[in-house]
Amino acid sequence: MQMTRLKQTWPFQALADNIRFRIMRLLLAIQTPICVGEIANALSLPSNHITKHTQILEISGLVVIYRKGRSCFVSADSSNENTKAIFMAVMGMSDESGIHKEDLSRLLEEEGEVVCRND
Image 1 (cartoon, rainbow, N blue to C red):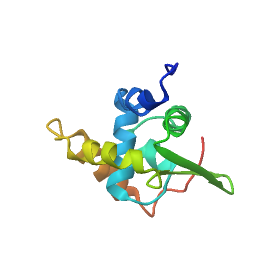
Image 2: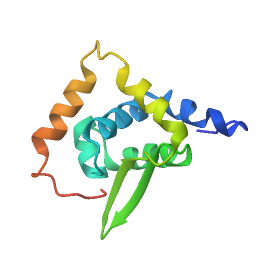
Image 3: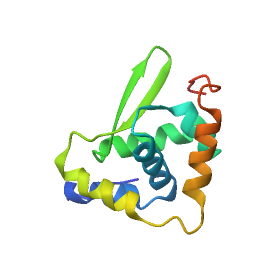
Image 4: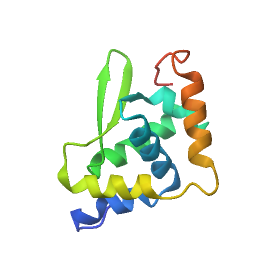
């Protein structure tokens, strides 16, 4: 994804992608760092796809990524005042399709069972 010159638009460009939007909703719902492997399982996607999407979210200023051993963790960047309104808007959107509920359910079902990994 190529970002336009206006840095203020980067978060919106990042959230325009369905996968990245779903990742943000999970991170905001859980409100704690999540391992990339857990996100991958929740979204039923390979970890390498999640890694690429989280890197774009990080560039746009929406998430923070850090490593702990071999695991990579992602959390919403709540330290940025500009993103708080965006986060509220993301969480305020309806889940008519039920996708967010399904993703969250898969994440919570496997919590504790999943070994954090970067496949």
